[in-house]
Length: 251
Image 1: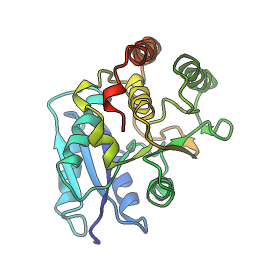
Image 2: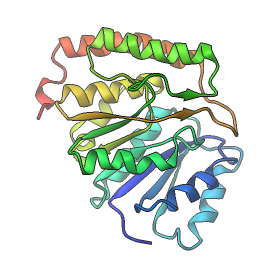
Image 3: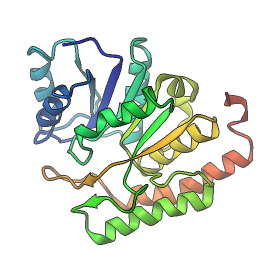
């Protein structure tokens, strides 16, 4: 396989039904992408599946695994992945992506193009930039997610339609600038905090329209506490900005 400056970070917990399928789908893309799986001690054997794939050609040297001791949260999984990627200087474009095909692998090159070819620092796979593009979610969850993003925009003033999106491409310099150890949230609020911080630091952001499809295999990890964290976390982020938390970090 061709050497790549792109790496996709996929956090996993009990994704045995999906992990092999998503890895194969990514490696079939025309663009070269490496993959880093961050597994939080999945009792269903997700990590063992990844290890098996790592031993096969053509995956050798392009598929990596970090195993953690337990379910430590989405945000900390991505922070672990970001630090790993930053420790490898060849990676210029660093992605967030779910394992369950709610994020279509075919859209990954479109996010890359937004950063590499159009000069953006963060590309967001957005469900709400061109209407509401969500498939197979209960209406109650669609409305909760949609109005959560509206709430975030109202409170923070951030000009992003899908503030809780978890399908993203960062330029390396963004993650190298953000003090990752100071990111405090773990769930939905983590996604908001990362976007808000990127915006506060003056980086260029583009939303790329995508269609979000609810998982077909495995169980959702969503919970009410995640939404609660986001609601109160947004107020904390706005307060941080008013107190000048981001001023000394700006480009």
